Amino acid sequence: MRDLIKIEYLTNAEIEGLMSLAQEYKNGKKSNFSNHHCALMFFENSTRTMFSFECALNKLGAYSYIFDNAKSSILKGEEIFDTINNLCAIGISTFITRTAKEGFIDELKKLEFYKPINFINAGEGKSSHPTQALLDYFTMKEKLKDVKNKKIVIVGDIKHSRVAKSNIKLLSKMGANLVLCAPKYFTEEIDGAEYVPNLNEALLGADVVMCLRIQKERLNEEVSIQDYIKNYQINSVNMPKDAILMHPGPVNRDVEISNELINSKYGRTILNQAENGVYVRMAVLDSVFKGDEA
Ligand code: CP
Image (tube, rainbow, N blue to C red; front, top):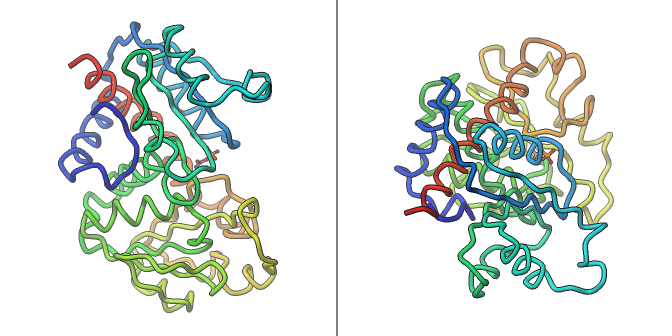
């Protein structure tokens, strides 16, 4: 694997291979990739994904460099291609990027750089966040063994969520029964999943309830948060007792999930997701580094 761009570019066998490798890292596998130099280029805010990648790079013995856009020469008018090409000449070979621009890495892959380089998508526009979907799948497998025919209910701002899009791609490949639950203003037609707008109906028999944050930074229209809370918040009354509660983070407490529910035993899985993210990203980096050396 030379790059990780989108879930849809991976075969089921490649996804399962990453899961096995992530499990090996979780079990204590050690590697040394001290000949790899990686830039973390985040043009949108991040806490989990950036620290998780940096932690994974440190554990693998690779070098990480945080690109600070506000202090960079992009603000002097340098084009992103020239920035990356110069960093490539300096010795960076892997670029972990987060941008608002759809197709950012696909566009860069058409260009010729000074030396061969690898890209890893750490979140792109409203459409893809592949490492989040991989770590969510890893966490589901840890809890449920298999997602085939399991009912996974994704609740919230589907329309603006790249996490939802990558998860739907991955989980439908793996045979999960996907139900999307959202008000009209957060609905977008997506292949491979069924919409059930009524929350109580959607939650019936759920194995996993995955909540999404309202992506205020991507909203063009006015949305009533109070209306959302009233009709779509997951709380200790409507949470199916035997299901797993998931959320990619950041959580807005008392909006998509009640504070009480997050503070209960159900909230721990959200931290399991963050923990597993490091092992999954170690597996992704290992595969990209080995693909680079092949
Ligand atoms: N889940 C996720 O992408 O979180 P961050 O935005 O904090 O990286």
